[in-house]
Length: 230
Image 1 (tube, helix red, strand yellow):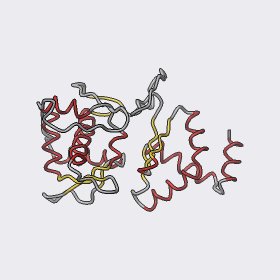
Image 2: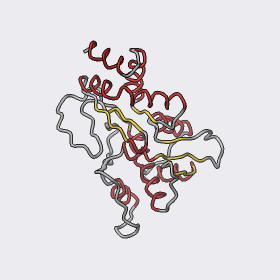
Image 3: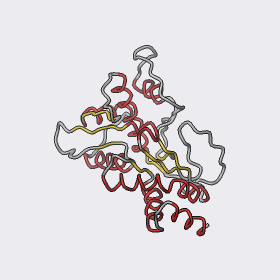
């Protein structure tokens, strides 16, 4: 396969260092977002040049790349991962599948719920970002989880988790009136009808809110288990 890669790199006017950098970033970070930074934007542009090569190489390893072109966002799903809107009958053991802690799973549901709420209110920017204050984020998380975060450090760790996946953007969360931006990339990580599940947890009946349909088939089941996988 190395000969195939070298021929492709020559055609793309790139070298093996470029190829390795893109592959390693996707394996280590899982997500690539064009608007994140200048460096990540350059890596995204390099990926476009090497798209076929990177897909073929990671495909041999069992990874699946999903490119959300309108959002300029790329997600690398490990073998056996459940992909939103994509049927997957892969029975391979999920050794590479990311394991989520319960609070990480609930935080994904929380930001998805808040994003859809702000989307219905028309409060999402042209770049697909919805801004919410940290107090509301924490309050919504507590209602869904039926428990509050014991320490501020726990919230910071969850925000770092979301930021690593390029789901949120923020600068300083120390101020009491701090805001975070929830990107539309959250739609790539939560599956099926999250609103139905959250509404049930919050005790809202059908008809209490407007119905809003998201593209694809998304779902992330609530569970009392300590760990989940995506």
